[in-house]
Amino acid sequence: MSTPVLEHPRESDRLDPAAFADAAASERDVAPLRAAIDRSCRGPVLWFFGSAVTWLIIGTVFALLASIKLHTPTFLGSAAWLTFGRVRPAHLDVVAFGWSAMAGLGCLIWLMCRLCRVPLRYPGVLVAAAVLWNVGVASGVTAVLAGYSTGVEWVEFPTWCAFILFIGFALVGLWGMMTFAGRRAGHVYVSQWYLFAVIFWFPWVYASVQILVLVSPVKGVTQESIHWWFGHNVLGVFFTPIGLATIYYLIPKVIGRPIHSYYLSILGFWSLALFYNWAGAHHLVSGPIPAWLVTVSAVCSMMMFIPVTTTAINHHMTMRGHFGVLRYSPTLRFVVFGAMTYTVVSFQGSLMSIRILNEPFHFTHHTIAHAHLGLYGFYTMVMFGAMYYIVPRLTGREWASSKLIRTHFWATAIGITAMFLLLSVGGMIQGFEMNHAARPLGELVKEKGLLDGTGEFFKGFKMKNGAVPFLAIVRDTIPWLWIRSGTGVLMFVGHVAFAVLMLLNLTGRGPKRQGPTLFSKDTDGYQRAFGSEESPAHTH
Amino acid sequence: MSWLSYILIFGVLAAFGASVVWALWWAMKGGQFSNFQRGAKSIFDDDEPVGARTDAFPDTRH
Image (cartoon, rainbow over all chains, first blue to last red; front, side, top):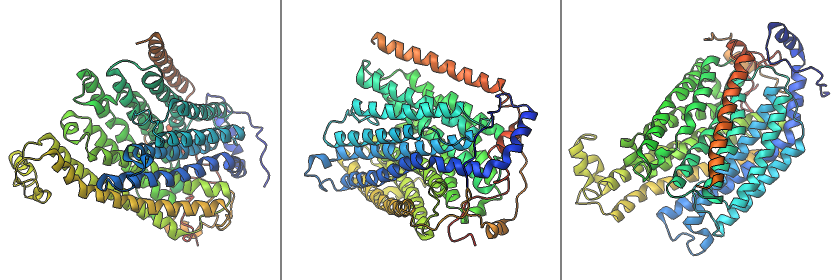
């Protein structure tokens, strides 16, 4: 199949009906064009995805080490570089900047090309960006393990490593702007709004925290305000928009149905843009910062109900009547799991910013559970789904084993669900105990009328005989920490299954694909199972 | 705070604030928000039209 020559001029920004009709006429060329776009993305995107999966395995090993050390502190405790204080930030940084960022940037690159309807240009720039990013993460995590961490959560890498990452991101950002400038598609799809936001927002938050906290530190508690503004917004203006952009593209594409309400999707983007970056200071509730700063942050966290609700309604209504497709599509399974989790974790996050809920739950394992639900249950699951869709289109090979895909899905889905639920309970108990450390929890529960009002529920946690000293609180967390390690092992099994699938695909072991763009042209049985679908009604 | 910090905070604040306003203005002027149904369908085409599903487990396609 020959690569089409892109001689069509880009539509003008003003989308008049005549121009759109011309564009529709040229749609006959879309199949070869889409195949050409996918082929052109092959090198750079697979560099990002391959690196991401490698970092995922490394990051999960660090996660297990850190988790085991929480309940068995002597485990590998004799080597300085394997102590908790180094392994734990190594886990965070590797899964955040190695796995999550590289998977997300791979998606960003592919989505930009698909939505701009142009094959990828300047692949060398993106490969260089991937190499730089890998060098940045590898040198950063080595420095952290060697004891050269900055000590600032989320930005533990030494500044020179962060600078390498920054240059790598700048190359992707510049490439993204050039691709957008040369686009064939006149309409800017909602996913592109999110992706463009990432291109501008991430350098902003990352440079701010580096300069104001590490390079030229501001004084006093202002540092912590900036630090947690970054800690919150690296999720909100980097990972979340990439995850949502991917969901908004893949759910409609996989089930063959446009978004239920495009209007709501645009409203969701602009309200997220307006409210998200005000939040962050609620991580410092009861801390020595101005109370109004925390209040503003909590109010804007609650305002996030608007974009989250619009997104939840949109995803659910788009999927309505199509949930049966989950049996057939690995992509949809992961992406819909991620989309549903986005709703849950966002509402939970907003509520946790309220002082009365923040006080017992913050600085406990409850927060850890919430963080994993966000970055794993939502973002990581969406990235898995995206890779299941994208990689076969780039390599020309389908996935080698359905069993491994199912193993991957169930191990990760059950793992993160169990981790979230059980660690949340453990964290809640820990929080109640820490807030009332001088009193027996059973008595407190009885007084407050929680649960059945008798405190029987908590008797198993050895808190009925007097006050709860701090070490007792620590001991009470141990069963929950064992559960945390167990669920971590389950997720690790899923990751290994996925890494094997990826390796088989990249080395050409999967069955060859039959069509240029579809997962398989032979979708007859698949179509027969569900019939054709009329376009759903839209709101305006 | 140093002058560098002030320039960074307020300069970037102004630049990013202005860029967001500009992006919104550009989108409204360019008709990006004028026909939402067309926007929703913009990711479909003749080859992968509305109604065509595009993903399945490897062993469920026959």
